[in-house]
Image 1: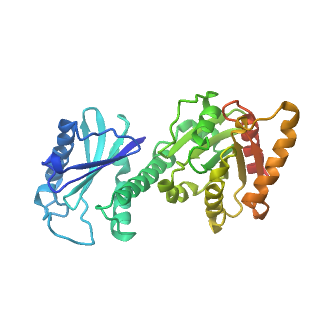
Image 2 (image 1 turned 90 degrees about the vertical axis):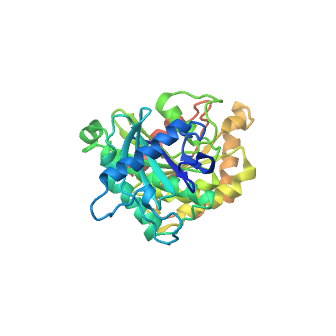
Image 3 (image 1 turned 90 degrees about the horizontal axis):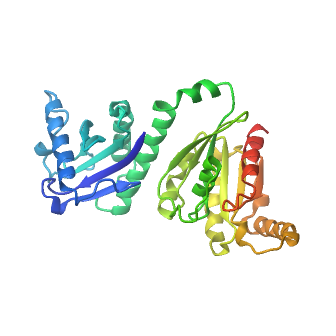
Length: 347
């Protein structure tokens, strides 16, 4: 499984003072660990020189003209390395940039050779031109590649045999879970999978995540949990592909962000490629709405009307859909979420 993607950028790799390091989703490699950084750079350069073909199709770091400017990026053949027990797969771009993947120890990086080379070529030379001088564009590149390679690994390379065997004739559901940040998406998935909740467990999620959750006699759910921060939202569409159901989550206690949430909701719903996909809207954090047991039902009905009016839910068409109120913290309606997902997909 792919755990991390990183990028080194500098005028001279050997001069670590001028080296910038970017990584997603975690900062596994730090510029302060100079020995590790040097080993990755040296290992890539040496392996690339050893693998260099007679026609010099792939250029090593040391032989590239670092001052040459071109809209067409020169991309090295990927190189596999084991450095400090990290299973790393690196490529070099224009001699100034190393981009690397970090896998589980038992993984074979060369299983990912085709998708790694394809994405680098597509994103750098055939699609939108990324500027490596702009931090947000570097982050967007890393996120795009991480999501695509992780999906390729989960769906093509590493799909557990028991899933293929047990569910090829039964129900396998891909759940696309989205919403703005801090609404409780990852907490929901964790609550469903483990039954646990911890107020201090999660900072807002800054990574794309897939969780497989088996529900006996019903089937297997694959939750694609999408980070909700602003700079990640343009990547949601990558995770939306081939989804069996869309789950949209709202923090009903934070009305200040309703307008922002509404905008992102309709950005997805108005896409033609979403037509027909069932939808479950989850209004989370009802534990923060103060009410007595006697008045709760009336209050939730009033809140439902307000949400329909504000979010224009009556305009939803071309799909089966439902709305549920939940509290991930108190476990209110969590079982109902699972049942409703299976019902909507089966309808």
